[in-house]
Length: 325
Image (cartoon, rainbow, N blue to C red; front, side, top):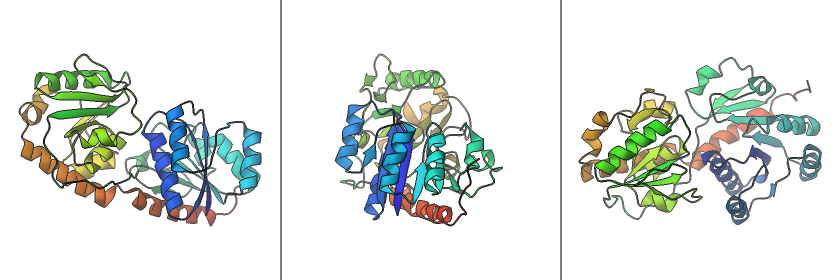
């Protein structure tokens, strides 16, 4: 299958997701062309070249149409609201189906999703939000690459990694947790834009795998939690809301909302975190890491994700052609 993957560049896990998807599709024997707009980061551009998938950087609609038409895709898989109108235009011009993955609850414009051959939602929580859509809709959770671990049990370090993009809505929780961890003797690192005296800020890190492997606690939401669990770390869900530690008792509920914090919609409370973090027990954190790794192997692999998406593509290709509106 020849698949045109479209997105706008975001300095976030959403772009990493798209890159991993392209790589996994290629490994599955598909042909992939990535059309990514607003890419202004040299490191990400180098990553595309290293991964070896063809790409187009222009956002000019007519230039894009000519290049895509020459390549001849069977289907378009779009990942951004910003590129959705162009994806629909290309689909109509080339008479091929378009599929869009919705990565966030406040996706706009929803009416354009009705013109898709299929819509992909990344969490079960999204079902209710988009239940009125009159097109085939599928829940396919984000996958990640699962790399081998040297040992089944991580060496204990009282080191926490905040893996997140800080926004005004998250700052109070991040500040409160960072201060608490520092006062409890933790070494705290930040990969992203969160800064606080005492926290070692590493800036935007394009390859977080080495950092995650050296931590025993990963803090964030969404993809950060999945990557932390896959690396054998305990994971603490914290963003605009706080859901706390991921355990085998709550993992299903937290995963339903894509580890966003929206399960409880609470805030970080030091007194509630202290029993786990003030005097951390290495065996407890190592056990959480082992569980997280097993769960990631069962649920989070990018191969599992792509196999599900292939079924979505088959459904889209079987739909009658969408007429221009």
